[in-house]
Image 1 (cartoon, rainbow, N blue to C red):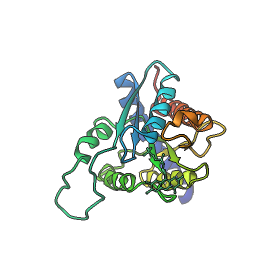
Image 2 (image 1 turned 180 degrees about the vertical axis):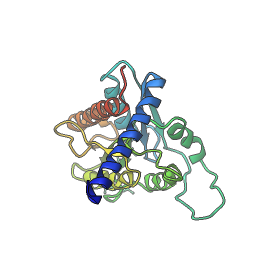
Image 3 (image 1 turned 135 degrees about the vertical axis):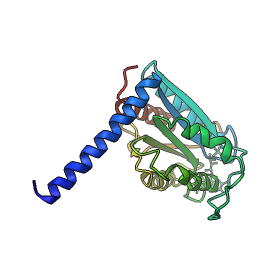
Length: 224
Ligand SMILES: Cc1cc2nc3c(=O)[nH]c(=O)nc-3n(C[C@H](O)[C@H](O)[C@H](O)COP(=O)(O)O)c2cc1C
């Protein structure tokens, strides 16, 4: 075996061992847990409704799927401060839901703000840095992303891509949705915050939830 083959074989073996460990941890719990995070500052509005829709669809994939909704609306979360002392804000109440235990699947939603993710979403994602060190706790966890805008083409796919780029730094397994939602779920707030009126967008949210659930089951290697 030459050096290149040896290195790639060793890396593959390491990755397989990591997945096997995750599978073992997950099968012990007896269920697959999918967490959804709504990153709009407006609690319970269209982004939250879209994330909830994706989680409800995820639950239809298998009876052993559990879901947890985290609505960051109304919370005060600052971006990473760069200071040595721990930051004290509402992130403290969110972190345990993503760490103890780490979810088997993650769905993140943000409104499109000037074709970017919301500042709250960026702050939340920066603070997730604590899940990268000393080890990559979110590695190999499937993640799907959705975005909501007031316009049909309001930058939803740009927002999704920005969030996916961050999640790749955690070595998460990025998934899209079923056909029609391959990039993620894209929703249009076309009727004064009643997101259910956007039938196409609601369908993409459901497709995203189903895809995340399917990937979570496969990667957790469980029987539910
Ligand atoms: C500061 C700001 C910037 C926005 N920029 C965009 C935008 O670029 N594209 C878009 O489609 N909608 C934009 N919107 C509208 C929101 O994305 C839309 O109302 C969304 O449904 C809000 O999500 P929420 O109901 O969960 O709060 C913007 C809203 C705000 C407050």
